[in-house]
Image (cartoon, rainbow, N blue to C red):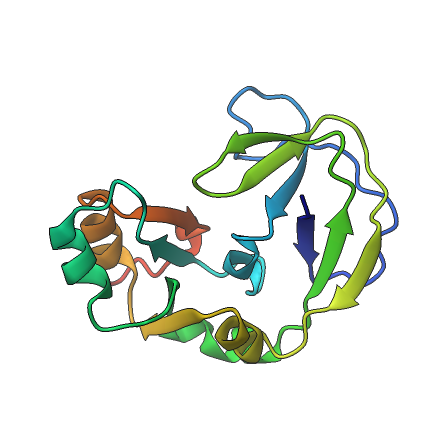
Length: 172
C-alpha cells in the first residue's frame, strides 16, 4: 500500500506526529492519505473542497442525481475564489513508509502513525489542474460550497469535505 503526504514545502526530511483539529482523541499523529484518495490533496493546503464519488451504498437516485452527467470516477468541487491559488501553488508529494500506519477512515483514505517517519521520496506534483485531469477527476468550480455540502450530507454518496472552515461565508 502506498501512502502520501502533500505539502507546499519542498524539503521535508522527517515528519513528527502532531495534534491537529482532526485528532478527536488528542493524540499526536503523522497523517497519510492512500493512493485512491490522493487527488483530494492536489490543492493548496487551505483550499476548501468537497470530493464525492459513487459508493457501494449509493442509491440509484443519487447516482442519477450526482453522476449521470459525467464519466469521471470522482468529482471535486472548489470555490471560484481559489482558482488563482490552485494555478499558482507549487505542491510536493511525499511517499511515506506504510508499516507504522493504521487506517482510521477508509471512506476518506486517512491513515495515521504515532511514530515519526522519514519520507521515502519527494517529487513535485506539477500542474495541479493537469494532475487532477490525469486522475480521472472532474473539477467543478462554484462560487460557494455550502449548497453542495447540504446536498451531499443528505445523500448516499461517498465523500470527503476538506478545510470547509475556509469556505466563503457570504453565500452560506
